[in-house]
Amino acid sequence: MNRESPNEYTSDFVQSAVAEYQTPLTRYAARLVGDPDRARDVVQDTFLKLMSQSPDSLNGHLAEWLFTVCRHRALDVLRKEGRMKRFEEGQAERVTADEPRVSRRMENAEIQETVLKLIDRLPPNQQEVIRLKFQNGFSYKEISRITALSVSNVGVLIHHAVHRLRDEFAAQRL
Image 1: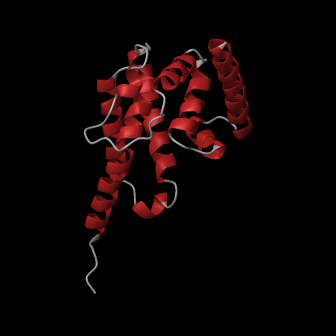
Image 2 (image 1 turned 90 degrees about the vertical axis):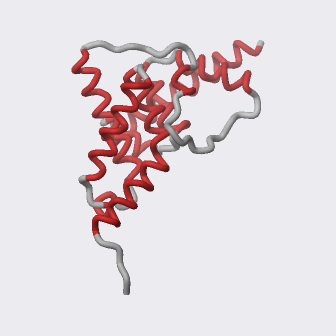
């Protein structure tokens, strides 16, 4: 029986993770640090840290682990720099990694643009949980572990954000 060596197994695991998660992590980090170049550095640091992990230790929790490490690294960068810089409107959504995955696009570009503008007007903590939930597909429990908020707090933030987005979207359509 010809088995891969542990190093080959880890290398394949990391390459697969990079292929699947580089783009969403870069987008997420860009939102947090406000700069696409710094975001790419944060994501690179995240994957470097992944290289020291045993694939078996992340069994079933790879995405959650990656987003948590990415978030912590982005916050470290912001703390070190002592300042936060926001993206120009819509700029974070255009940030992509070297080999972007095919993403889902809304049929109507006008609706997408309106929703993104409305999300940008939410408080930062609501923006973060909304993006983790709807752009990255995490559950409340996963978002809780990524952000260190309680599951109920995540639920409240998402509930209030969705309610506000719905009201503001309806008001713009009148």
